[in-house]
Length: 159
Image 1: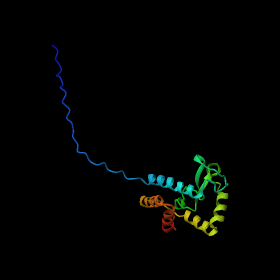
Image 2: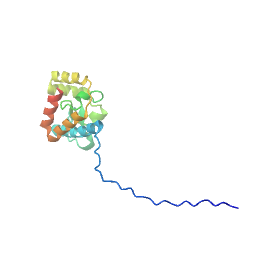
Image 3: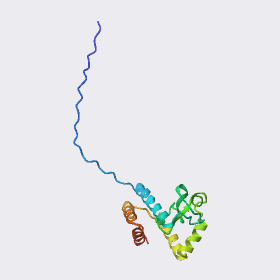
Image 4: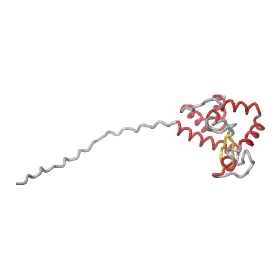
């Protein structure tokens, strides 16, 4: 005598009705704000300096050969990362292959802004700076309003 297994009956699926709620807006991370700030800032530098390399005077820079290069490198020197006097148009050769062509960059920076201004930037680069989301939002808004607004906001707050 064989016992039969009980037959399982499929339960009808109930639809769950949810009320439509507005989606929560994600908080923008500091990293995302830094990327946005850099994109706007690099465009500002390129518009300001034109398509001529600051260090080797190469003309006609365009596309991936046109960079916004730092005199005082970014790594560990966040205090001067967005300083308009520290960033200029550079060709890819100088910025990447020659690691910024630092000696020529510093010589031209001193010629343009003076030795005292160069020392001030070096001192500021040695300070510790962590960019916060409100600071970056303020600088992004100033850059979107225009170059003069950005320079005023930057120099008022960070000098």
